[in-house]
Length: 262
Image (cartoon, rainbow, N blue to C red):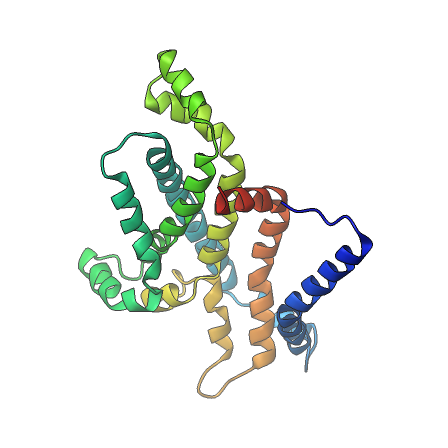
């Protein structure tokens, strides 16, 4: 990490950061202004009055929690194995896992659709949970492994000498030390799972199964295209993500920095 010691360097860095965030600020301001156009706050009241909105929130929460649980369970254990255990050919498996990062989500839609139909999971939350978790695991493993690489091997070796099994070393030594990267992965996965649109649109067809990101479609149709309420719905959808980031900001930044760099 570098430090900014002089006033000039701090000013230059502040200007650079301000320029970098401007492309993100302008669309956000336009979205807020657009959501308040026309009827003003009545746009938000209309969105909140939708009968399906509570169920949509519940479905999104269930999907997000399930995806986070699956990703964390697979990621932390995989990071422990790749980093600390002597597994034959583990680097080959690791790079095969990273190769999955090159596959865009849209390319997988056709085989996913066929698999979901064959499994009888169409129009169920599992049709979104499993693919969403699988798409998040490779990058999460990459971050987690780099973080676990920074944990001294001597800690695991000392536990082994004292008679601890690999499972005990994982539970009592590794897990308590991985809280920062777990928090970072949790926030990243939550943002992706909560904001997921393509998979719910394809696999969830009835209102009792659909998610919060599909709310704007209720204001877009053949004879209706109310963009003010679409923007209001989009802002309401983003609130849980903002709250989650603010709540875990300290751990998120620490874990992401440690996981991105050895």
